[in-house]
Length: 541
Ligand code: G6Q
Image (cartoon, rainbow, N blue to C red):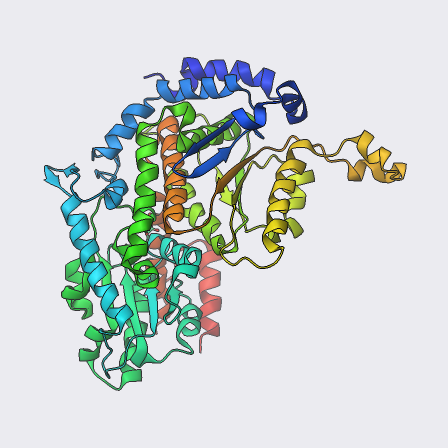
């Protein structure tokens, strides 16, 4: 296959960009009054309006052609059928198996993994029911009121995002906290008002060797044992583990009967629907968790079967390529108009940037095009009163993904109408702006006119659903997972490894003893690092 920039569709897109790039959304909308209805797609209860993007129907045709020339169809099949597409780690990539219905067959090395998935789900459900009903009691016989998930990265961001997103469906008799940072403040603040006798810790770590998580887990164990006045026996009642590493779980003192497993074919940032989601299941119950999985699965099926031009994740992925590679946009803002999705942008940052922040292609050569776009965002309307200024009148193009729902989960007076009016207004203002003529017609003083002109022509997607519920959350996450996958295929990179995280870990492990040794260490770093280490050692109590 020719490299990305050598493909016929890429070359056609370059020529097409010269023509479409300078066009204004005002003119595109004026030329086609049906645009707002036709440049849309709908699947699995998610509606995507992509008409306020700087493109024509021809752009979509060419982008789809590029996807075809890039082998996207074969890539999708390879992922779903369990081929080892994570080539640098020689692993299958099967988060889609986590939400496959009972009775389906997905083979990894000749073994059907679907029954394994459901066995763990059933075990999680039995445990969640016991905790939620009060049948599971702590060391002193009290029921569990607090659940603290200890994990980091993929073992934290998904669970915390899902808990926040689905809080309205959660058991309010239980308190949920999430500890991730090795900064002791995170642990101290999470437990400061909790009673150890009523607190259950879930140590979530695929490897069970991650230094942050293991440090927090040991601190939690000390806190729990000290608070209970018990011994190691209490650990079995107050600690469970989610991991692939039974040996390390056992060494920590957690009964492996209270360990919930998953598999090496689940990447950390794709694991919120595995046992890593145990805290989510405890919060919303096994039924709610199964709805979440059903939502994921519905989007999986859509991605696997829908023609590319109507395929939501494919369209979103291709739009990212269009802006990132042709317009040179470096970032995408994700702007949910739903307070419960406040951690969704942070979750997406890991999903998108850890997956596609790569400059080496699958065959080991550097790319000659940009990859991995920077994702960021905050819920609306808050962002409107801070960083939206730059999106409206700054010098950089920032495509936006607006996310909105027809119904509020807490309807109160006019709030939802006002919220929705704002998301519509922002997308409209970004696209169409305000011309000099319009500003002048409003009687603005001449010197102020330039400041009040909005160029417009700032692109956005509108992703719309009925209401935020567990199934819808699953669909939304799967939508972005598969958009990331689509981009990874086109860019020809391994979206499922994360070697970039390794170097810092190795260096930190080298520095720890240099900070802790009683004897002055022989420092051989650069002069800046050496100096900072000396400064820290001097300040240490
Ligand atoms: C995700 C990454 C990373 C990982 C954490 C936690 O894709 O691999 O964020 O999830 O480093 O790893 P453990 O679950 O092994 O503790």
